[in-house]
Amino acid sequence: MNDTPDIVIIGSGMGGSTVAAGLAASGASILILEAGDHIADHPVNRDQRAIFQRGHFRPKETWYEANGVGFNPGNYYNVGGNSKFYGAVLSRYRREDFALMEHQEGVSPAWPFSYDVLEPWYSRAERMYNVRGRLGEDPTEPHHSATYDYPPVPDEPAIADVRARLKAKGLHPSSLPLGVDIDRWLAKARTPWDAHPNSADGKMDAETVALSAALQHGNVKLETNARVLKLETGANGLIEKVVYQKNGQTLSVTPAIVVLSAGAVQSSVLLLRSANDRYKTGLANSSDQVGRNFMNHNSSAVIGISPTFRNTSVYQKTFAFNDFYLSDGEGGPPLGNVQLLGRVSGKILKGSLPHVPERLLDFIAGHAVDFYAMSEDIPNPESRIMVDGDRIVLQWKRTNWDAHLALVAKLKGILKSIGFPLVLAKPFDKRTPSHQCGTVRIGNDPATAPLDIFCRAYDHQNLFVVDASFLPTSAAVNPALTVASQALRVADHIASTDLKQTRVAADLNPATPRLS
Image (cartoon, rainbow, N blue to C red; front, side, top):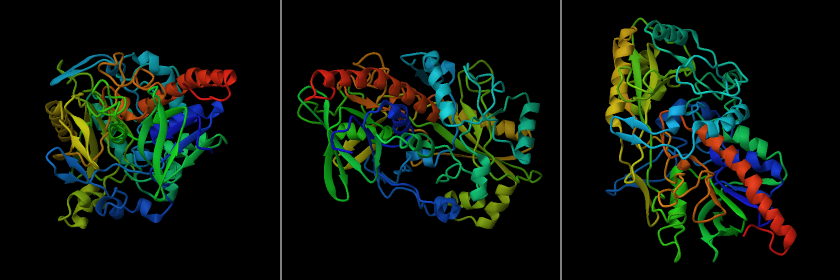
């Protein structure tokens, strides 16, 4: 790979790897720069004490709140990004999520296009990521133009019992769409996959699916441990150079097209840190929206405990219900999504309750079922990512929290009504990246959004931002599939427009073969 590739992709998470897979067959020379390395296949990958008590995989870095207080974030830097640890839930946004939605504490704005525009790419992404699922169980499920290629991951007996209890109450538990080959996963070790790293163990993540497919093409190269420092612009406003650091050296490449996919926090940080004399507030930021509208789902673990219930499950995470997704069930505003957590053990609980004996926590976990309640965080321009020298500053202003508390209260009442007399809830805080998004959003107006509907920066015609930062709303479902679907759509757009224009220009003037 020379230092003038056609395309540089910064980051190998769900957005970057899926774009690479979508562009690989184009023949363009593609260089993927990843700040981290591969997760090796080591026993620690399934060691719950190491993961949850000792924080073995957590980054050794500090971010700061606006008041200067530091904290250790839960974002991962490795090939495949956060998808290496994700719960592999590959849900579609609901049709209503693309339209304006009234919430208890404000309005979630409409997307610049409808669900129907993205639907074909949803189907393509589901096929690419080998999603397991079943249609027809969830009344909120939007139209699918194709069925799932694989049946859902089966409920274990204890979980089938809980599903039946919920159905008897008139709720609609539905099989989660999952990117997991459960037989392969359990063959390595009998643990849940949620929050456990994947090293080709059967979880369909960005590396094992999309990046693996992209690297089958000789025109696609991956460079690990390559941390991008800044983007430099030319006189025409295009991104002219990508500067990165590797093995203590500062290097650079000069691509025709740059796809920034470093994640909602790091993508906005890189744009802000790339400010220059012409773009004084950062790149792609004439709207003053880069870093703003940071969203992180309002989420809580809700655990129902019963002395008569014995949870013998290994992985647990197989169904969800959306009965309170579009309203509170009584004609009021939306509350959110409820889904099973990956099976919680005493070893996992010990990470949050260090002073409680692990044996007692094991006993409690053995008589508990674990849910994840998730509510939409509404975009707020004062909820933002900022930079202060070398510091990353997170000013997260939660929205819609009362609606989330109402969802947790609903769930507690339901669990008590189906035989779990003791129900505990614990919210997740800023140290847990509960689907961070929104910091470089798409929109139809360059005065209010940094990106157009194909994730192209209005200010720099050869820069695309393709990760969860482009999401204009967080909705209340896991965003991975929506990011992958838009990434495939953007890849098709780049291949049919930008690369075609580049090749025409090269034919006309071989001395200047790149986009201008």
